[in-house]
Length: 169
Image 1 (spheres, rainbow, N blue to C red):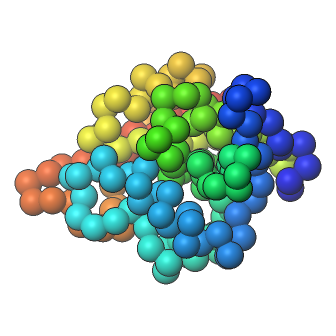
Image 2 (cartoon, helix red, strand yellow):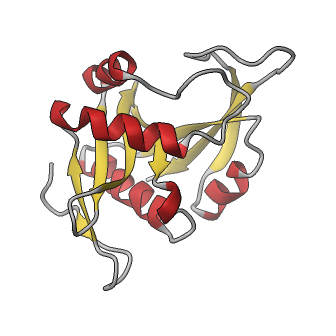
């Protein structure tokens, strides 16, 4: 799967895309938890060794490494029926706002397209209102809502649901 996924946002900060392996788990956990630290409405960390291993059994994680071999972004990819699913998009906080998230999505979409998927879905938490406009700019549209089934507890008094956004590949 690594063929054809190497590219970079510009000549100054190239990244290399590749599929994560079990050996990447400690670095992925650190990356994902740092990227999701903004979700203060949830208790605990976004992932741990057990949750990450479970995700990697059900799907794949595409990673981006910088020129020094440091993981700077990742995204979870899976099959959901006849459609692809992308989730847990994580970008190193030091690299956010530089187009790396967009690049990760484009690389993941290309992978799903090559696997024969014609559409992809993502879910966005309603407590992250800044995200739907960003995904809309990348061609995603809101298609439905779902119950939020958190892997970690919501803080007391907080209500949340998932916004499903979809895109034709």
